[in-house]
Length: 431
Ligand code: GDP
Ligand code: IMO
Ligand code: MG
Image (tube, rainbow, N blue to C red; front, side):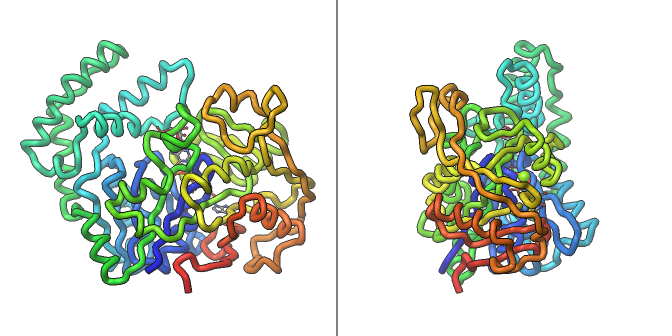
């Protein structure tokens, strides 16, 4: 049986949500395996926009199982609001089930306070989303975390909360001069969340295994992007989880044999929200054109995304670290109207050396100049194209060049935000 993982190849916001929504039609189980509500995945179905932060992007389809895996960090208030909003809009199909892993870690109010207090004082800011993601993962690794199963056990929850709070309040008040947090208030607030979420909680690794045994197809939905990966990204300007495909195993509780096809989502240009090096960033009219035409505004924080040319060095790094088997090019329509289009194919160091891999040292990366290939653009709108033949010659050449430079076959080209605005080249589940 073929299963599929969807991974961002850049710095997030590549259009993973759109592609997962599209592929969900062919899958039965859709699993988020890392990150939290730092993610913002946008689906546009019949002209109606849905933004998901925690719920898997298969949720709008009938008769699916959507899973928030153990590797996700969950802000329960945000999750409940997300469920309620979908219900209120009447878009949550009655026969689609949502499950939350009992092993997922819970984002607590002190995680959010520490995240924002730290960021406001850092000289070299990371530009986090302020959602408490990093501090929650820190507690997970230092074995101080509170998991969903702990939240459901009143005694365990009280004990862990109060002991954590002693340390967190010391840190917040002494290090940041911030107000201490009230344990009883958090306790009762989070108990009400536990009550609401209880029916959704399960050992989700067991559910995935059972569905796989029945021959059902599993779709793993990555959040963020390869260059925000804690190991393989532009450290320290990264998020606090592994965003590459290996974490689909750890964060969902499956073995690597279950991941057959890995689809890398690659925007036709590059964007980044937050701080950190960005070799192909454009601060000129073209950068503004991409930002405005692509409506490049952060889905979670509303910050303007930084924009630049496509960087194949980044994409090849993603292909290697996740074993990507197929590429989905998104937002090709945004390049319409540009006279000339560039692709970065290497980095030139100050000593003239050409690098074809991303250096680990950010000082080295910052000093690099992109080496570009330039091609002619196109002016015809392409949103209506449903086959490669319907694309203007130069648009076709551009994506064919990406295929050559990466050595990975294209499986999809997205030409608009809508589910139907897509050129599907291959079914990643086979058949
Ligand atoms: P994700 O985090 O990877 O799921 O991506 P986001 O949803 O944060 O950002 C992608 C944005 O681009 C969303 O507003 C999508 O609706 C939009 N989008 C996705 N694919 C296309 C496309 O092919 N063309 C255009 N114009 N917009 C797209
Ligand atoms: P999706 O899934 C783009 C960025 C933040 C910041 C850095 C660390 O929608 O692609 P964090 O709050 O995670 O500690 O912030 O990571 N970031 C994202 N950028 N898309 C995302 O998710 C992101 N999630 C985190 O802007 O630079
Ligand atoms: Mg996003």
